[in-house]
Image (cartoon, rainbow over all chains, first blue to last red; front, side, top):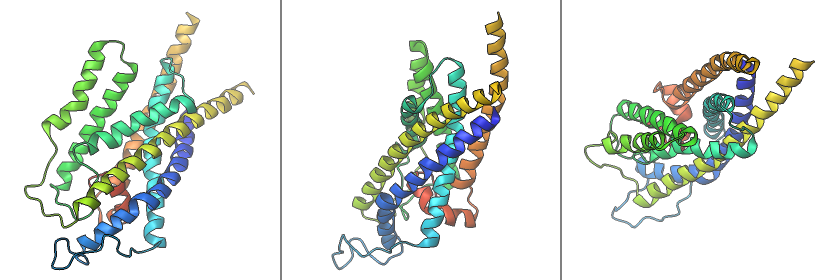
Length: 232
Length: 56
């Protein structure tokens, strides 16, 4: 049984991760590289000279972008491990798990892991002002944890009590508030930062939907293999 | 009765691996996305930003 969890998570994480990395390279990375020109001081917003909005950006960097691909696959494998764990328990309670239902799992995972924390701590370009990273990480884990529980309650709750608790769990971290910086010091134009947040969340949604689909597919497939092996 | 026993046996056999997978998942996310060690931070930098993890 353990191998069913691990194998389906590894396959799903690798497949979704490599597509996520590709999407990030095409849609997110150029915006980040653009922002870094302001972070490093090569371009200055509101300086003496007007700055072109279309500077030349560095091209493919084998080490940097290669590491990004590896780490994206690792992160999505981590997500997949948690997702198949929840899928396995849900299936036992009567839920159907396959590629098709996996899509909804992917959307729920995106809400828990990207949208919920990003609703207050928006995906940030390098160079923006931010509070202490340790404090923000604690808030991030707390928000993802409560949102994940909330999504489970939305999906498998049987009554308004469960759904009410889910709504409270979803809203609470944002009502309480995340650690915010005391002053704004970011040198990056708002146009770039806004585009970055939108692109990061959009790619996140696409990648998570694929992750849910792959996780559902491989979970079901590994189940068939396991049953066949048990019979033989 | 047999079904109930079967379901219970299944629950036991599935809960531990599910918990193991979930803990492993949290460990992978913490290591790749959150540990602030310089080498890890630099290697994962772009991905941490793109996935909305607190980075700096």
